[in-house]
Length: 433
Image 1 (cartoon, rainbow, N blue to C red):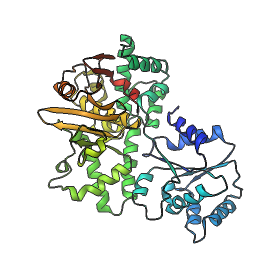
Image 2 (cartoon, helix red, strand yellow):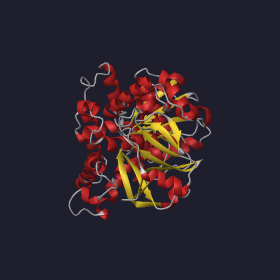
Image 3 (cartoon, one colour):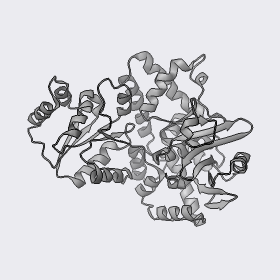
Image 4 (tube, helix red, strand yellow):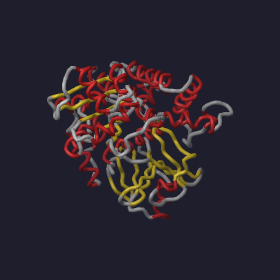
């Protein structure tokens, strides 16, 4: 399947290919597949090493010798010479801190090493890194589950993409029949989610949601829980991470979605759960959105790191954990959890486009789902799951703070009225930095 991440790999190849590339992302987002495709299409001499399987490579880099000699040992072990046109892909690199540390040498060497690294829990490893990290000597890219644009590519509805982009840019309605069809696909995408294996199965069963194998998402969630056991200090820490993760769906269903420690368990306290939350953030399993108390650039400077929302990295996983019946969700326009799922979807799409997320909430007064720091200034975003878009919050913000424009994401068609840009739910991928 085509991935937009491929373009980032091409950019790396053209600009700074001798700077090692490190790809960070949650398990089963398709890192190995897309990197393999890129390398096979662009290089003739290719070495693939999975450190989870090939422990001898890990042992070589643990040896008390200099990095140059370690590379020679690696060549002997592989029985092949690393040439100037050789590219090496170290998969599951989180298994070797010593190799990560050695990337500095590989970057600074006169020999033009070409190195790509990836790892499922690489973010967690880097947060707990004990050796010298090659700061400034590694190009780090984040990879996320597939977004709705990639979903349209996968189901061969590419023709709609350019039309969506045109209508978004010009603020003109898309054809009503196309609009309704895209809303149907959007709902199906919420169910299937952006995990490549899940989307492939959906395509395999001819996009019949009744035939779709939800067991794929079950197994992904199971693998996430298994990682919590493998990449933690002890069983006690594992249990706390698991409790936080499993509490998130119900937290997102609350009217005010601010993360509440009391929702994890009775008498839970922040100091006891800071580390588990940090683990989940580093693993890319959750997406944070921080409360801000001032609407000024940069928003990061006014973020309250102790007040936040946590979204799941994929709506398919969220739907699965909530146990929502697919037929009811598709048929009922005002399904109870639709708002929370739509907001989670928007959070994931915006994050994929490189945005850091912020929000503002003053219960009973103003509720702004997202605030984006952009070249056009601070842009407020409101998310509605349906066509009922009445809201006092957005109008209040526009009147008081006079942004260049505001964005309302809903089931309504494209348009621009009263300084509010109307963006259909299926077009969030157009909101780029």
